[in-house]
Length: 573
Image (cartoon, rainbow, N blue to C red; front, side):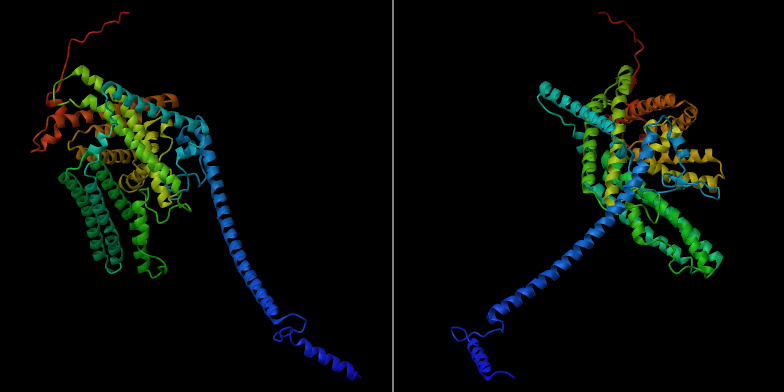
């Protein structure tokens, strides 16, 4: 039993502890004020919230780290694959073997450009994620040093000319006049390009209408009429497109460089349209066949989505596929570097034209030219022609194509092969411009061999060279406003002749002969076109008849005089 006295003491102490010194505070039962107790509760709640926030942050960090690790692993796997591919290709390049033999020895599907089909038909184009050849070669420090040496030589040549002009004449000529004169009315060129783009976009709904319209006509005769009408419409569109663009170029009187840019875009659009239609016709026919037999898959469509078509119009390829290898991100530093290279090369080509070509041909047509000066002009164009050829290759096929590929995340960047190592003209043609060659192979050569000429490959080869020559000649003829078929003769006759002459030569002899013909051919071509261009400026024709555009003015207006009194004397020292 409890003691009453003790209970009274506890009650008294409890009543005494129920108030603090000022008589207002209450006890929390353990001897602490209630305000301090609340503060501790708030602190505990704040700590719990902070822990919850930390847990959320840690979870997000873990997810981000896992996601980045997955991306890094994927990048590592792709880089290893690219490294193996580059390692193989670079090792083959540094061996004394031709690229054609390398192609025949390569059996792996990851390194083959085309794959053999089991039905005996010609192989198809296969897209693989890979870098351009020069991109990989520049990773070798020796090749990179050669690139730096070549760049320094160009800079020294430019500085030498600038200093010479400043000391000799007191003025500086940067060689910008060909750019200013050649790319004049560029805003009209952009407007014309936009119109061409809108016209080509109309191809997709027209093709979709044809493909879906085949399901309406169950009668075979009506369907055949529908197909013939579609073929006729496609041909009329291509012809009308080319005719209207050329007419616009002539009416707007675009300068040469702007005209070349527009006409090259016109040719690219024509090839793109043909590639899209030709590649999707079997798909539409197969869809109609399956639809009639009622076993069509639910996801099957007669035409690809519009996004596929739109991406193909801008992708740096002329062979249509629904899907292409894509990179994971855009490297803007790569885009910026390649665009600087494009601008620099255009500037340097303008400098070459201003310093080396204009002084040779600016008087043609204004006065009679002796045969000696004519020969000097021909040989004087060999070095500028070769430099312009190499600069044009680097600008268009490497810098421009790689910049556009990076913007579009297009992963297959084999726009050219090692054409500089080619030992035959046929090997050079296949390696020089892979983008155009793939289109010619896929839609002209392959279709001709399989459907038109029935395995007669030499006729298909002639057709390929003829198509290429016609496209090149159309661009040059309407860009410079005269028909001077130097390019056509080089492609159609000299090209076919060199294919047979260099077919059985050794690698060294073939490579030397190829480079010799390239340098001489580019020099002759550049000199003859410049000669005719300046002759028509200095001795303009009426242009009232077609003959005025067909007859070379450089040979008829003040012409070339022959000097029969050439003598050869030895130099005395």
